[in-house]
Image 1 (cartoon, rainbow, N blue to C red):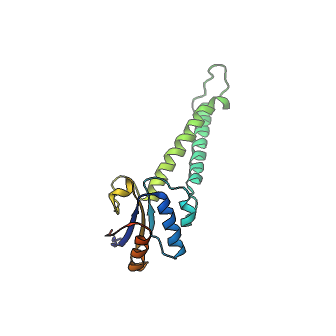
Image 2: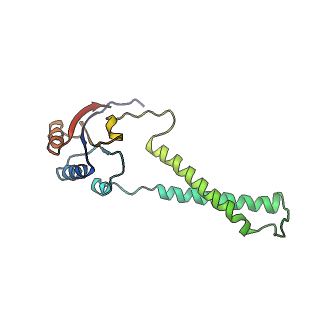
Image 3: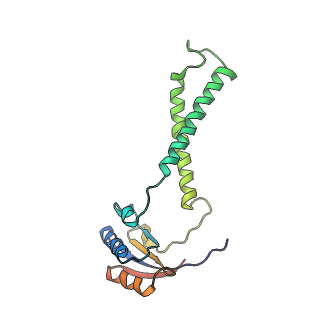
Length: 172
């Protein structure tokens, strides 16, 4: 699949409150925002952009349940069928003795599974290179980006200027 270049116009803001005001105004003017970038999470931005809640916690629950079953069923098989040894006066199938390992594998499966899922969904990982708009976005600037194929360039440029942004253009 060939990568198609995209012409993007974007504005950089110094403060997250200016960014929030600009995003609200862009939505009011029905400008199609390609993406919003910030060096840290901005509270209240998701509802303004109309973003749905992440389903990563559902994946975490599923991975945790798989970890719980793996630990519990694995220890059940090991201590009742594969290597049944009575130690410390405990029966072969001693559920209270299984709890610490079951808890640890639940947490391990959940954490590792969510990290892998996050990387896959986000398009991150080893060997992946992603285009970026500006180095300052990861440092101290906030950004609203518009795809030039979806909005009028002059309208987007005037909007960004009117909201106090440092206007830039780039092909990614």
